Image 1: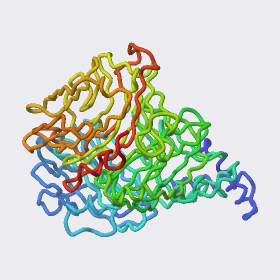
Image 2: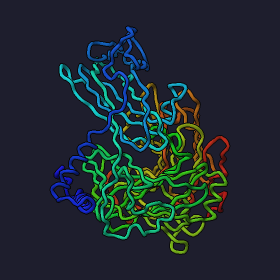
Image 3: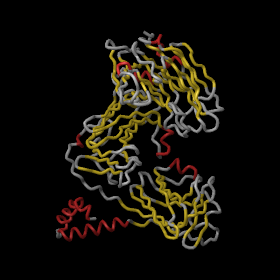
Image 4: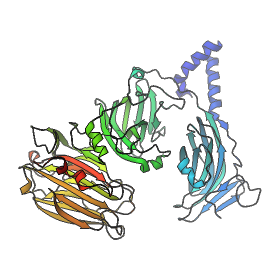
Length: 607
């Protein structure tokens, strides 16, 4: 309480003025009020000690979900005995609640092992239990561990979102674990949210025109302490990840390399329209600004992968206004604008403002209308069409000042010593099915092609779901080795092993000093599900592969990137001879897509 005294002073002054009382009495009154509020109000939870007056083996007023013989009512509680790693076991209860209030579940547990306590918020009780996850407005869970011979208390706290009328408490031992934990008592309390303490801002943030972004400086704070129109994700834990109000703005602090923290806003969008979002911060280190397009707003974070269409990001740090410019793909309804410090990063920054606006370009709308899934033609004059940038130096080349495959601009990848890569990242394909890619590459006359390997195009499998053993090399890629074009197709082998097929495509000497067009058509499939891959060079078929191209158990497809990658920063050779140029990337997906949609030759004759 003493640590929060400075924040209480405005209220103390208010009580003195209105009630005409002494400062000491005002302090005493405010402390008493806060103490009463902190205790919360008890919610009617039926049978919190799990008695079984009916003698049917199930605690009265609780439902078995999933039920089983392992639910054992004992004196002073219920024991969950789950000895199966293939089945789950749990009990649940529905409780009427109200939106805009903070609910706290407290669980006293003894015994060995543990289980989850879930708290679901819903508008109404669904007819089938299997629909709860899909219809929940919000859910939260924490792991409850038994205290052995003593009792260990675990709490879970969450605010009921708008529209909430019911909460479901669920004690659940998942189907992948075993436990013998005893729940001796459970309680649910409710707390009205006090107005957030007023923090006087030193800037004029409230007057900033955020364009498409509401509350762009986050100066307007809601009753729950969260900036109006914004959401925390991942939410801060109050210890090593925090989001706090300061006179300068909202401060995000991440001092853990195991946990992340972020804040986001949903923005309605229209497909084919280019959107630009800008973020400005002060402070130490930095974080990412993500712009992610979705086909609809998911109710739960676990459903996000089902609606996500495309994503781009840019690093945000002090002294730099980060900009993400990107086009809403076909089917996009919302953009999730997200400031995020990843679980592997550290930051301590204050958000000055985030703004957004439309940038309507006819070429972008045409590309979406033609069914393209993604493209990088660099006609924006920058790298805004890329999902992200990796590694070292890169420049935009203007027609008349260097080689350009089509239009007015191309991209030059310039690898420097100390860097192992310089690449631009493009779209990620669906987890399975047909995808087509077209792009063009310019190999300068003096390019050093004699190194052991220079990877120039990749289809990377990071973040795609089930993991497989590494094979000591990169995923599927086109590369140059000892003066030769080569291609590696990496895929699943027997069982859960990793295998690869290598292809030799001939010398690069005849391709120096000119643009080389590439088209890859592939059906990403696991073993036994078909699969094929075709690679064309300047319109000529150079690979015709039938068979496995991907892996089983994947929930996302590979993402495309091109540039230079040599594996480590101490690569031999000189920087002036480590430059390649790229242009005319297009991607289409689905059985109805075509070679012509992505082939550079369709849009411009090869110089």
